[in-house]
Image (cartoon, rainbow, N blue to C red):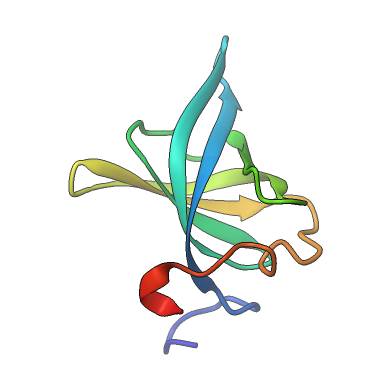
Length: 105
């Protein structure tokens, strides 16, 4: 764990296509990529921003993966948005089914 990193669970690098879903008067869905994951949260790259503190759901075709969470940050980076999601429900093994990215295997 990096110095100053307050996370209780190790994050694993991954590269998994996900859908980021949220409500803002009308249902919104954005195609995105999960780039790292732990039992308590994920870092998502998307082409659209999502407001901080917005309730979201991260959904993947990976078996057993669909987590509710809250956006903790949304930063524009290299033409995309990097979105930090803190899960609001237990992720019993959600970090296990996702395959690591090819550069990290």
